[in-house]
Image 1: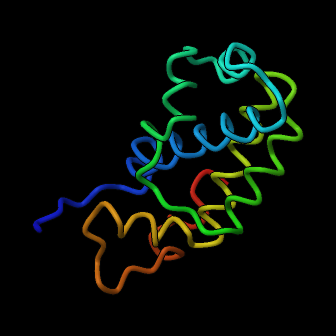
Image 2: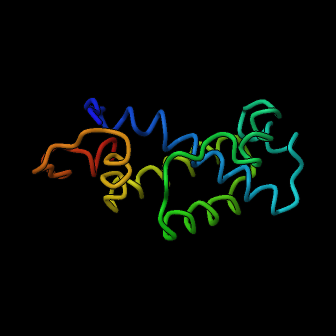
Image 3: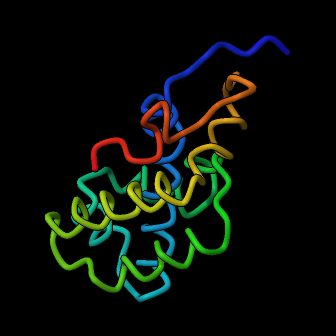
Length: 127
């Protein structure tokens, strides 16, 4: 397979953020929130929430247990859309600094053999 080089930010936008949103939706549903409440908090359509819960969307990136635990913890703090932004940024930073970004990047893109996330700025982007 001849994969193109994608920037880590492209991987975040196309794969990581949708997967984090899916986990947000799933864990919010587990807490008893309705799909409508989840849609309002995440600023997405109810149909999108339904697709997240049914695993029809936001399923391509694979997160380890530590990241999933962090996402679950985040959901307990989310009460407003501002909280969604804050927690999304916290999770993205965790993914970058834990080098989980490297493993996810390798799932979808060519990554240079001697890739050093610190040298390239991937592990601390936007910090």
